Image 1 (cartoon, chains in turn purple, red):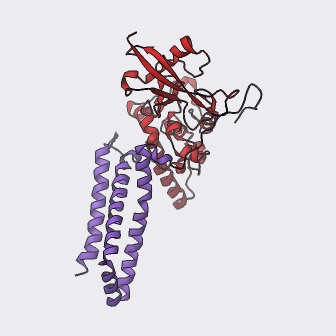
Image 2 (cartoon, rainbow over the protein chains, first blue to last red):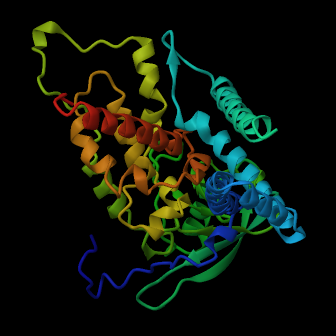
Image 3 (cartoon, one colour):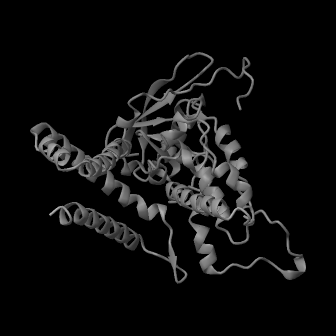
Length: 138
Length: 247
C-alpha cells in the first residue's frame, strides 16, 4: 500500500486511536452503551433458565430463590439490570427499520410500520413470558 | 470584506516536523463563503505551501473531505455561517495516513473498493441488436440511494471500527457493492459475496451508524450493511438447508 520511503517521500503521520475514543462523540457513547448493556440481556436469559431449574428442583429450592430475590442488594442489582435491559432493547429495536428493507405490493414498507411490528412482537413475547411466570404460578 | 474568521489548520511537514502542529490564520471572509474558500484564500494570499485536495467545488468530486471542527465534512459544502462562532479548526480526514498538511492517503479505501467489484457484472451479455437493458422506476428506486456515493471517504473517517479493524472493507465499499447487488441488470452478487460475508466484510460492522450521519449524499451505508447481513444470513440458511440449490 505504502510507496517507498525516499528523501521526497518521508514518513506519513498515523494518528493512533485513543482508548477513550467512545467519549469523543455522543453517538459513539450511545453505541458503547448499547453494546455494554447487552450483558444485561445475557444475564436475564441465564437468570430465566436458573429460575426454571429452581422450580424444577421443588418447592424448597423455589422458596430459597424467592427469599434471595427479596434481599435489598439483589433488588437493587435487578433494578439496574432492568434499566440496562430496557436501554438495550429500545436502542436495538429502534435500529430495526434501517436493517430491514421489506417490500409489500412493490413498495417499501415504511420505517414506522417496521418499528411498530417489532415493538408489538416485543410486547407479545413479554406478555407470553409474564403469563407463564405469573399466570401458571398461581 | 466585512468580517474575518480565525482558521486553525493542522499542518504536517514531514521533512521538518515529526508530528503535526496547528497554525492559526486570520482570514477576511464573506458571509456566503465555505470552509474551502477560506483555505483557498490562505493558499493564494498567505501561505502557498498549505496542501489540501479539492476539485469541483460543488459537492460532486468528493476530494475536499476534511475534519472540520472535529466532524468529517466536505469543505466545499460547509458554510462558515453554519458553524458556531469562534475559530474554525480544519484537520485531515481521520483514520487515514497523513501525507502532508490536509492531504491523506486513501489507497486502502480505493483498493477495497476495487475488491468488491463495483460495476455491472453479466454472466452473458445480450446481443446489441436486442437493445439496452431496460429498468422500471421501481427497479431503479431499489438501488438509487446507494448510487449517490461520491467516494469521499467521510464514512471511513467517521467509523470507529475501521481504525480498530484495519482489514474491515468499510462502509462506502460495502454500500457500493450493495448498489450493484440490488441492480436487476447485475448478475455478480455471488462474486461479491465472498468478501462481503467474510470476517472483514459486513460482520465486522457493529452498527455504530456514524457513517450514515456524516454522509453528504445521504447514502446510508450503515443501513446497507445491516440489510446485507440479513440477506447473507438468509442465503446461509438456504445453502445449509438446501445444499443442492444453485446460488
